[in-house]
Each structure stands twice: as structure tokens, then as C-alpha cells.
Length: 196
Image 1 (tube, rainbow, N blue to C red):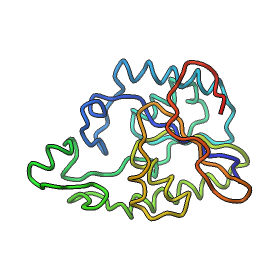
Image 2 (cartoon, rainbow, N blue to C red):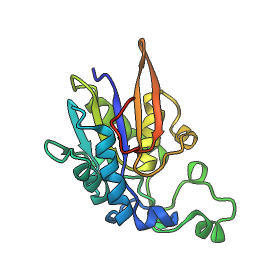
Image 3 (tube, rainbow, N blue to C red):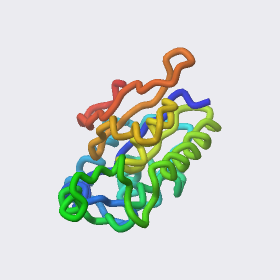
């Protein structure tokens, strides 16, 4: 059983900066995203993980690499971001121009994944991580990691809406005695070693 799951959201991209929904579009990091990924590496300070998994998308793989964890990292398609279907590349204000009052967590997306489908993928990632014999690092995206946290806590899929998650941050899922908990959430890189 892993001691902790370390959720590491990728650095900034042009679309994360603009607020556009970025699921299947394979964008690189911005220069600022690369800088903050390097700070994540300093924050993690070479921490050893029993298993490192990364989304197949380049923004997550680049963050993993720049942070110093490319060697031995395994790509896991279940860590891919939510497939936003027809809303890919659109911001919430743009979507609300045609669907007033639209909310991702309540209304979903046409021709994409349901929140339940993303939750099922998150459960598979947790199952895989549970086979490791130590801490596990997961390099991925905002919504999949928020849904994964809900899954870890046995909350319903749309409870992911309650966990704000910035780019280039670390969050830690662990235990208090036998109870699954959020140990730390949305920690920005400080440039120093991890003290969590």
C-alpha cells in the first residue's frame, strides 16, 4: 500500500492561462510553465517515489521531466484530462454565450466524457498506485486530479468541484490512521525543498 499519493499538476500552458478547457489538445508548457516546473523539482528535492505515473499529454510529461522524474516515469492514459468534447478549447464565458448558466460539474459536455467516466479512470489509477510499496507521484491535469481526490475520499464524482487546483502545484493524499485524507492541497512551489 502506498504511504501517500503526490498529485502534481502540470505547469502553465497558453490555454490554462486563458481559461480554455484543455482536454485532448496536446499543448506545450509556456516559458512560465517551464520555470514553475523547475521550481517543482526544487520543491520535491529529489524525493524518491516507488512509482511515478504521468499523463500522456506533453504538458504533464514536460513537467515530469523538468521536475527531474522522467527516468522511470510510466505513461498512464487513465491520467489524461477530462475529454471536453465540443467544449474543447472554449472558456466557460464562451460556453455560457450559447448555454447560459452552464456548469461543467452539473451539465457536462456534449460529445465528451461524463464526470462518471473520468471518475472510473481515476479509480483505475488509484488501484494501480495501491500496488506500489511506497509513495507514488502522479503528474497530470486539474480536473482529473480533482476527481481523483474525490475518488480517494469515496465522495461522488462531482465533489471534485470542491477542490480548486492551480497549475504547477503539489497535493498529497494520505492517511490519518486508516482513514483516507487530504494531507496537503494545492501547494505552490517555493523553490525550496518539500517540507510536507
